[in-house]
Length: 422
Image (cartoon, rainbow, N blue to C red):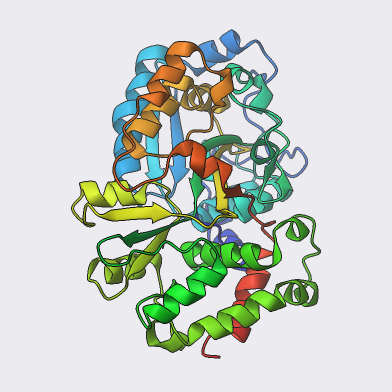
């Protein structure tokens, strides 16, 4: 899931507040405040027995806001998740596609207007967006440990359950799905699968002008650069690094030297870069490039199934691993359907729905395999992940933690200054 830059988010938040802050519908605002944020019905008790929360959730409509550009995910939510919620709990799930910066702006505008009944219930979120929303008291919580399936299926000691891009979660969001950077090429065209940055450099030299990556801050391009940085200088030092440009630049200088040298052998000699990962992928499909990359680990299988890629297309990783992250679901602080949101999120992290997500979307599940019953394990084991991909175990064994979200924009700025056209 894409992480937006904090300055742009705050700018949009301020603009939306000034535009909408005085135009909230009559009857929704209230002059009373609770730490700067209005609360919903006093009848809702997040610490209540979960059966009581289920009763409160019945016959409610819960609105799930998130990026709406993935048609396969939209279909899964509407045809798999929504019917399950309706049948089991009489909850209506409404999917609302919206970019995360606009979601945060909308939440901030409602907060400033003291809206007691917000329009957003659940939010697909992670990284810097989560940090910004939590720090600005836009999220409800903690609620994670109130969910039976969180305690039943999720490893609460997992680093990606406790921290989101280096920031403590503290029960304010629940994992939804996992992603991981992978590289893709066609074995019929290139026999090599580079295992580290040294081999990658030789690969680019051999296929001069036939390799590139998306310009930062494209999410995939940025993750690719971070993966190269990790391979060259390691990843541990970044986990607690000060978000200071001078400190970061000094730490990544060997990688910057590598990237400047790499430019000589890239498409257009690294003077320019494709704007998006989609453009890189199209160039690969058109044989203009000999490899592509994705933050979706099973992208090769999906591409083969859709006849975008040949059957000789395959996925590979560096030996030291590649960057991976988890995306999450949070609840808006002024949601008027907190009970329904909690029940819906609890269902989404059930073994059944997580298995369906793995089957239908090839999204890495967030449930802990060790916590599953034998029949639940069998369902995950029997998922056909498709051609040209790497198994879940291999991916997770070569999964590197994301950098803290406040380090990423600094690296993107340094890349623009020190790498592009050098």
